[in-house]
Figure 1 (cartoon, rainbow, N blue to C red):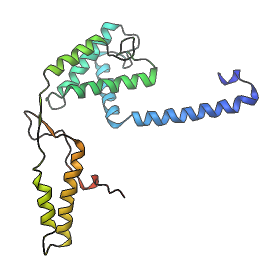
Figure 2 (cartoon, one colour; figure 1 turned 90 degrees about the horizontal axis):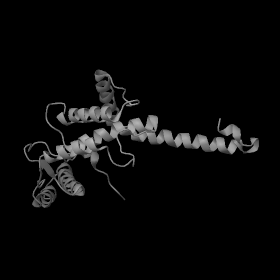
Figure 3 (cartoon, rainbow, N blue to C red; figure 1 turned 45 degrees about the vertical axis):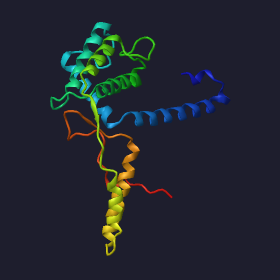
Figure 4 (tube, rainbow, N blue to C red; figure 1 turned 45 degrees about the horizontal axis):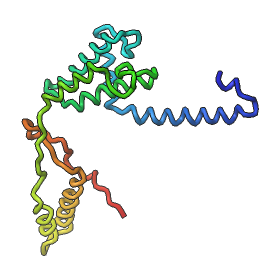
Length: 207
């Protein structure tokens, strides 16, 4: 309908602009719609269905939006196995739902009029969660002497090519993991670290 207003000889240019824009929007949507976002959106729709609220929150007043969203935030916080997850994960879940609603409707019902900050009830909920988040504890991944020892062990006299490769991979793994910067673990969950274990497929060689 918009293109019908343009002169005939210019219509082709505008149509190509529209097609290119649509293609870029589609690419952006694909990138934004990750597996995690789909998962949280399905959980949100199921939650809304159970309590009889439209998932896009269309037609809902402020009190209903605030109540439903904080309730769902609490559901995310509880976690799948009954262990409270971090405030950052709750914030990310809320953000994924808000992004899905915004992409489909152009509205952000979870935000204030400035379009930047969440409505006050959500802000207060996240602040409350943060007060009870477990403190992170810095933890050294391994002793600094390890890569030096691995290098000496791998290249000692009489080693096989396999042993040399093992020594090299340990050294590479150590310096690769330094890119993370810090190694943290939850204070009461020593076995569950926030950094990911090094894997062979994570190694990339640059020329």
